Image 1 (cartoon, rainbow, N blue to C red):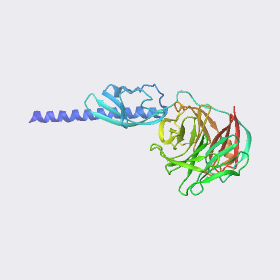
Image 2: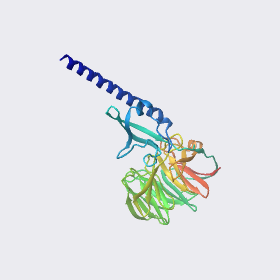
Image 3: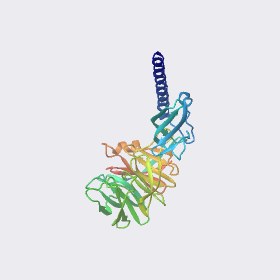
Image 4: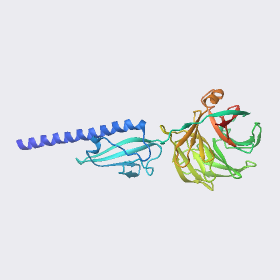
Length: 341
């Protein structure tokens, strides 16, 4: 009986020892992940886990929902730019199975450039227009105007505010981004989960389309000559088939060298780059569409200060007039033409 008591006591000590060791592994891993979350990684980096973790592990893997890898390298097959919600799965040499959730941030390798500009012209803009989509072709502005009950698509000549044509949306629709594709104009809605296609000349409604399921909401929209590119307020940009906008071709995540960018809103494509306004910020990003890396930023703080009085009348309009950029905002009385230096 005495031997059994001693053996039982030893087993309890062993269990306590293993539990403490496992807790230390998880604590060490948590400290490491927290320290790396702000610093982030780049594609190709290897996760250098602390010795307390690696030396006590029989195996380590990382899972991303239904995907899992034991290659502790930041591989674009598994990771996207920006934040990645993952789970570390550790099988210890003592036979325990440990799991810990973490966020792994992946950033671009090269710092974004601050792009300078000069205001060279100002044009009137109807301050009643809640700009959601904005583009120019020739000297004609095509604009998607938001708000439930007041949403519309319209076009007018730059320098005037009188519509040449317009089409109203239904009461329940909240117009969002728009873009020109050939002889048509495509327009998103915010939460109606559908978009519209119009004749470019008359703005007569031709058809509508449902969003692919992955697109949560409609925010910004542009066209790169092959695909529609849509934003939904996240860090992701979605490439859609213009012949069937319900079909997603691919998506990319967007990040700079030290931060992820979400709230991507009004979009424009020009000379091989995507330009994206960041919602509620006087900032426009220049994005490499091949990988989602932000290569440059425009700071329109001074322009925004002159036109922003509340929380809604923010910068939200990008178009290119030749090599110059046109910028405006929700309920702004002006459109600015800027020369990029």
